[in-house]
Amino acid sequence: MKQRNVMLKSAIAVALGLGSAAANATNGDQMLGVTATQWGMAGAVTAAPQDAGTVLTNPAGLAVIEMDEFRSDMGFGFLNPPRTANGNKSDSDLYMMPSGAIAFRINNRLTAGMGMAGLSGMGVDFSDVNPTPGSGNQAVVTTKQFYKIAPGFAYQVNDKLSLGAALNIDYQSLAISNPDMQLPQNQVFGFGATFGAIYKINPVLQLGFSYVSEQNMDAFKWNVVSDLDDPTAPPGGVYEMTMDAPAQYSLGLAWTPSDTLLIEADIKQIMFSDVLNKVDLKTPGGTNTMEFGWDDQTVYAIAVQKQVNEKTTVRMGYNYGASPIEAEDVANNIGSLAVTEKHLTLGLTRQLSKKFSGSLSYAKAFENKVEHDVSPAYIELEQNVFNLQLTYKN
Image (cartoon, rainbow, N blue to C red; front, side, top):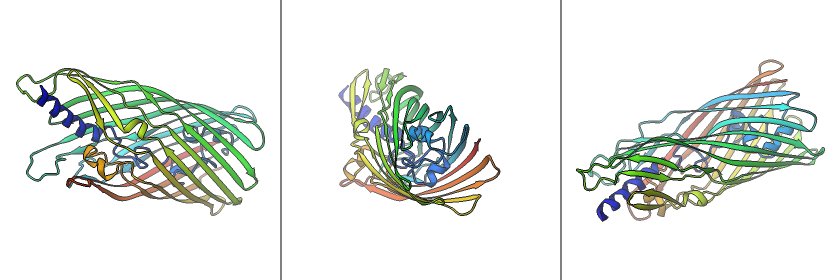
């Protein structure tokens, strides 16, 4: 039984390292934005939001976005994350990311809205993850998805201050497959909240703040059937694990020196250590604690937006956040490829008619490699992200 538990813990450590850490996002396991406009600004949208997607990031922005009575911002993106674990490349490298948000201006002070977006996840498909040559096939395939629906509102307190709040309704799914463990696709729901404020300091400076609470998720539960002919097989029964999403704090300052130029700088703190430092898996043989060791992450983003003419606006941004996975934790995160640090983004909006416009963005997450400080294990990732957004407003 002791050998079986050791094998189980090893198998789950590898599997969760691949499945639970949202291996294909950008700032750790968090996307830079939810719309093409937000991606084009490298996520620097806390103080001067540009579209209805702000209900997911800073709901106070609903009060200040450009619209009269109604606005719709719908789109999708493609994520291409070439990644490697111990010299082995993942076979899956293209994923789709849907997003959308709407806003209604009820009166001069109150604006309501609702948004939906995929914020982390996707999964990996490695034919082998063992760092030792000739050690045998150690295939690991995982799928993880995290979506959020956020109905919210903003209230214009006065000419300078706007406040907002949104309810977070979360959906999360997870499946893990490796030579020692088969946990089929399962899904859970959870809840949280987002609060925000925007304050106009003077005609050219604007300050923004937002807080996303920790997202409290229900526990995943799997029914596992043990192979009685294999003494190393995990015991049969119910397996249970809870994976919450981290709290976030964002502060932004926007400067508009002219009607056609916007410069914004944001700083964000993502509290990964509260949810991904340790994860408990309850099994019929006891509780296994996986020590992933994720650190909190401080993210810096700066972006410039320039209106070139009446119909065309361009954007460029830079985003940096040190990897939450450090060298000493690589062995416990084989395949948790959430290690990109430097991001360069480009964006474009074209006014197609009086009420209709289209936006595009491209983000490049530059290759980053984290090697274990003792063993030969390493994880490596780069990313290309394309987004399309269609906007209607009146």
